[in-house]
Amino acid sequence: MQQRSNTHTLILVSIVCGLLLATAFIAGCTSSTPESTAPAVTAAATAAPVATAAQAPVAAVTTAAPAAPSAAAATTSTPAPVYTYSEGNVVAYTAASLSGVSPKLAEGFEEMYPGHKVVFNLAGTQALKTQVVNGAYADVFISASNAYTTELTNGGYFVTGTVKPLTSNYVIVILPKDNPANIKSLADLAKPGVKIAVADKSVPVGTATTSVIGKLAKSTEYGKAWNTSVYSNVVTYETSEPAVATKVQLGEVDAGFVYESTYIAGNDKYLAISVPRAVNYLQTYTIGVMKQSTSKGAASDFETFMLSTKGQQILEDYGFRPL
Image (cartoon, rainbow, N blue to C red; front, side, top):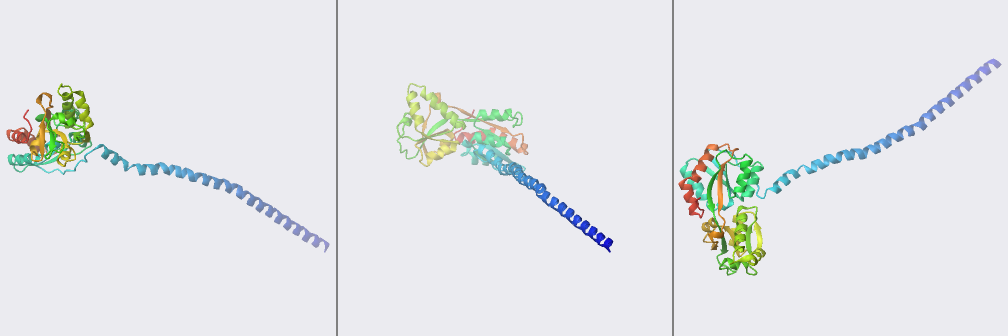
């Protein structure tokens, strides 16, 4: 009996010890869990900013991507129109000063080459050059500046041997029909309060205007004081020659420096004061067929027409001068 009691006691002690050991083991596991979990939470917390930082450049790229077209468009003062190729049609990128004569040229070309047509993209030569360099499509390029023609030639944009002198133009001063400033001579351009429009120097007629004023300033008749007063009266610098003429026609300015062809094409809208030939600037225009043209036959025909007696006569009728 005593032996059985001792056996029971040993069993109970073993059970209790086993329970105590199990409790200790569980407690040990429980107490170590926060220690192992804490670094995991810390790592997760640390990972979050890293993930955000990693995403930041992606977001920046996504945001910045649309800026590329905006930057490209900003460099082009006149957006390039989009033309679709059509057999027999010619897309002619043409100096804005030919705006007045362009409808007559289109008519003459279609008469000389039935079935052919020409579409003119008219803008300042500097804008046309930028459009072409940026990838705009053109069959023919007519420039009012040898500088831009040379730049495109050096860039390999023209079919070799097609760039040729086309016509020329002199500078003239136009006034509104009612002539509110009562301007009667070039000397009057220096009068206080006179408002003058000129083209920016990046525009061919702007370069020509600067030359004319500079030559007049060197003469004994006008001089440096006149030069200073004239420039102080300039209220706007335009990005195309027709824009100067529009300012005059609308009466927003009292005078503007343009080409003779613009005055002749719209002599019912303006009065004019001529600039002596000795100090004038003869602007030379060129024409060339673009290497990218997919209608080089029609483009060559258009160039032939422009250089023909018929084309030259139309230009002369609108104030352009033969070379």
